[in-house]
Image (cartoon, rainbow, N blue to C red; front, side, top):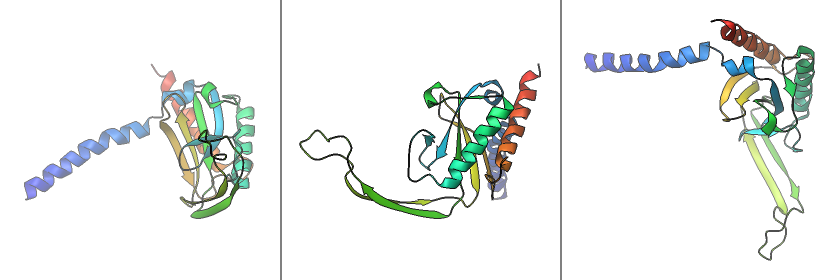
Length: 180
Protein backbone atom coordinates (compact mmCIF):
# COMPACT_ATOMS: atom_id res chain seq x y z
CA UNK A 1 0.00 0.00 0.00
CA UNK A 2 2.83 2.39 0.88
CA UNK A 3 4.55 1.56 -2.40
CA UNK A 4 1.37 2.41 -4.33
CA UNK A 5 0.97 5.69 -2.44
CA UNK A 6 4.61 6.64 -3.06
CA UNK A 7 4.31 5.76 -6.74
CA UNK A 8 1.16 7.86 -7.14
CA UNK A 9 2.80 10.80 -5.35
CA UNK A 10 5.80 10.53 -7.68
CA UNK A 11 3.58 10.51 -10.77
CA UNK A 12 1.72 13.53 -9.42
CA UNK A 13 4.96 15.48 -8.85
CA UNK A 14 6.31 14.62 -12.29
CA UNK A 15 3.09 15.85 -13.90
CA UNK A 16 2.99 19.08 -11.86
CA UNK A 17 6.62 20.20 -12.22
CA UNK A 18 6.48 20.89 -16.00
CA UNK A 19 3.34 23.00 -15.51
CA UNK A 20 5.00 25.06 -12.81
CA UNK A 21 7.98 25.75 -15.07
CA UNK A 22 5.74 26.84 -17.95
CA UNK A 23 3.94 29.33 -15.70
CA UNK A 24 7.22 30.75 -14.33
CA UNK A 25 8.43 31.72 -17.81
CA UNK A 26 6.23 34.34 -19.50
CA UNK A 27 5.34 33.66 -23.13
CA UNK A 28 7.61 35.31 -25.71
CA UNK A 29 4.51 36.57 -27.52
CA UNK A 30 4.01 39.14 -24.76
CA UNK A 31 7.35 40.69 -25.71
CA UNK A 32 7.13 40.22 -29.47
CA UNK A 33 3.54 41.26 -30.18
CA UNK A 34 2.78 44.72 -31.49
CA UNK A 35 -0.99 44.76 -32.13
CA UNK A 36 -3.68 44.23 -29.49
CA UNK A 37 -7.45 44.31 -29.43
CA UNK A 38 -9.33 45.26 -26.28
CA UNK A 39 -12.53 43.75 -25.00
CA UNK A 40 -14.41 41.98 -22.28
CA UNK A 41 -14.58 38.47 -20.90
CA UNK A 42 -18.24 37.53 -20.69
CA UNK A 43 -17.55 34.02 -19.43
CA UNK A 44 -17.96 32.41 -22.83
CA UNK A 45 -15.02 34.07 -24.57
CA UNK A 46 -13.62 37.38 -25.71
CA UNK A 47 -16.05 40.12 -26.77
CA UNK A 48 -14.56 43.06 -28.64
CA UNK A 49 -14.99 46.52 -27.15
CA UNK A 50 -16.72 47.54 -30.40
CA UNK A 51 -19.58 45.06 -29.80
CA UNK A 52 -22.35 46.97 -28.06
CA UNK A 53 -23.62 44.77 -25.24
CA UNK A 54 -25.91 45.51 -22.35
CA UNK A 55 -24.19 43.00 -20.05
CA UNK A 56 -20.93 45.00 -19.91
CA UNK A 57 -20.77 46.92 -16.64
CA UNK A 58 -19.92 50.66 -16.60
CA UNK A 59 -16.97 49.80 -14.32
CA UNK A 60 -15.65 47.43 -17.01
CA UNK A 61 -15.92 50.13 -19.66
CA UNK A 62 -14.05 52.57 -17.39
CA UNK A 63 -11.34 49.98 -16.67
CA UNK A 64 -10.88 49.29 -20.38
CA UNK A 65 -10.53 53.02 -21.04
CA UNK A 66 -7.85 53.24 -18.31
CA UNK A 67 -6.01 50.33 -19.93
CA UNK A 68 -6.27 51.97 -23.35
CA UNK A 69 -4.76 55.15 -21.88
CA UNK A 70 -1.99 53.04 -20.31
CA UNK A 71 -1.24 51.40 -23.66
CA UNK A 72 -1.06 54.78 -25.39
CA UNK A 73 1.35 56.15 -22.76
CA UNK A 74 3.46 52.97 -22.75
CA UNK A 75 3.85 52.87 -26.54
CA UNK A 76 4.55 49.12 -26.47
CA UNK A 77 1.43 47.98 -28.28
CA UNK A 78 -0.89 49.51 -30.84
CA UNK A 79 -4.63 49.05 -30.31
CA UNK A 80 -6.54 47.78 -33.36
CA UNK A 81 -10.30 47.81 -33.76
CA UNK A 82 -10.75 44.34 -35.25
CA UNK A 83 -9.62 41.33 -33.17
CA UNK A 84 -8.62 39.60 -36.43
CA UNK A 85 -5.87 42.19 -36.89
CA UNK A 86 -4.42 41.66 -33.40
CA UNK A 87 -1.74 39.38 -32.05
CA UNK A 88 -3.01 39.66 -28.47
CA UNK A 89 -6.54 40.00 -27.11
CA UNK A 90 -6.76 41.80 -23.76
CA UNK A 91 -10.02 41.25 -21.89
CA UNK A 92 -11.27 42.68 -18.60
CA UNK A 93 -13.93 41.41 -16.23
CA UNK A 94 -15.11 43.18 -13.10
CA UNK A 95 -15.52 40.81 -10.18
CA UNK A 96 -19.01 39.81 -9.14
CA UNK A 97 -20.57 36.82 -7.52
CA UNK A 98 -23.71 36.81 -9.63
CA UNK A 99 -25.63 39.10 -11.92
CA UNK A 100 -29.07 38.67 -13.37
CA UNK A 101 -30.06 40.40 -16.56
CA UNK A 102 -33.08 40.57 -18.75
CA UNK A 103 -34.80 42.53 -21.40
CA UNK A 104 -36.81 42.32 -24.56
CA UNK A 105 -35.15 41.65 -27.87
CA UNK A 106 -36.87 42.97 -30.97
CA UNK A 107 -35.97 42.88 -34.62
CA UNK A 108 -33.08 41.04 -36.13
CA UNK A 109 -32.68 38.97 -39.26
CA UNK A 110 -35.48 36.77 -40.50
CA UNK A 111 -35.21 33.08 -39.76
CA UNK A 112 -35.83 32.38 -43.45
CA UNK A 113 -38.50 29.79 -42.65
CA UNK A 114 -41.49 32.03 -43.05
CA UNK A 115 -41.39 32.96 -39.38
CA UNK A 116 -40.74 36.26 -37.75
CA UNK A 117 -37.41 37.79 -36.96
CA UNK A 118 -34.94 35.70 -34.97
CA UNK A 119 -34.34 36.97 -31.45
CA UNK A 120 -37.72 38.52 -30.72
CA UNK A 121 -39.35 38.20 -27.34
CA UNK A 122 -38.19 38.21 -23.75
CA UNK A 123 -34.66 37.21 -22.85
CA UNK A 124 -32.70 36.82 -19.67
CA UNK A 125 -29.62 35.35 -18.17
CA UNK A 126 -27.58 34.76 -15.07
CA UNK A 127 -23.81 35.07 -14.75
CA UNK A 128 -21.84 33.60 -11.87
CA UNK A 129 -18.23 34.66 -11.53
CA UNK A 130 -15.32 35.27 -9.20
CA UNK A 131 -15.57 38.24 -6.84
CA UNK A 132 -12.08 39.31 -8.01
CA UNK A 133 -11.41 41.65 -10.93
CA UNK A 134 -9.58 40.04 -13.82
CA UNK A 135 -7.45 40.81 -16.88
CA UNK A 136 -6.89 38.01 -19.35
CA UNK A 137 -4.58 38.02 -22.35
CA UNK A 138 -5.17 35.58 -25.20
CA UNK A 139 -3.09 34.61 -28.20
CA UNK A 140 -5.27 36.00 -31.00
CA UNK A 141 -4.18 33.31 -33.49
CA UNK A 142 -5.00 30.29 -31.33
CA UNK A 143 -7.38 31.75 -28.78
CA UNK A 144 -5.36 30.22 -25.95
CA UNK A 145 -4.99 32.00 -22.64
CA UNK A 146 -1.41 33.18 -22.11
CA UNK A 147 -1.76 35.39 -19.02
CA UNK A 148 -4.37 36.01 -16.33
CA UNK A 149 -4.29 38.35 -13.38
CA UNK A 150 -6.94 38.36 -10.66
CA UNK A 151 -7.21 40.64 -7.65
CA UNK A 152 -9.90 42.27 -5.52
CA UNK A 153 -10.40 45.82 -6.84
CA UNK A 154 -7.71 45.14 -9.43
CA UNK A 155 -9.43 47.27 -12.08
CA UNK A 156 -9.98 50.39 -9.98
CA UNK A 157 -8.15 53.66 -10.39
CA UNK A 158 -6.46 55.47 -13.27
CA UNK A 159 -3.61 52.94 -13.38
CA UNK A 160 -5.35 49.73 -12.33
CA UNK A 161 -3.16 47.38 -10.22
CA UNK A 162 -3.83 44.48 -12.60
CA UNK A 163 -2.55 46.58 -15.49
CA UNK A 164 0.67 47.18 -13.55
CA UNK A 165 0.96 43.40 -12.96
CA UNK A 166 0.54 42.77 -16.68
CA UNK A 167 3.23 45.32 -17.55
CA UNK A 168 5.59 43.62 -15.09
CA UNK A 169 4.92 40.28 -16.80
CA UNK A 170 5.70 41.82 -20.20
CA UNK A 171 8.97 43.21 -18.79
CA UNK A 172 9.90 39.68 -17.62
CA UNK A 173 9.08 38.33 -21.08
CA UNK A 174 11.26 40.98 -22.72
CA UNK A 175 14.20 40.05 -20.49
CA UNK A 176 13.84 36.35 -21.20
CA UNK A 177 13.54 36.90 -24.97
CA UNK A 178 16.65 39.12 -25.13
CA UNK A 179 18.79 36.48 -23.38
CA UNK A 180 20.70 34.25 -25.84
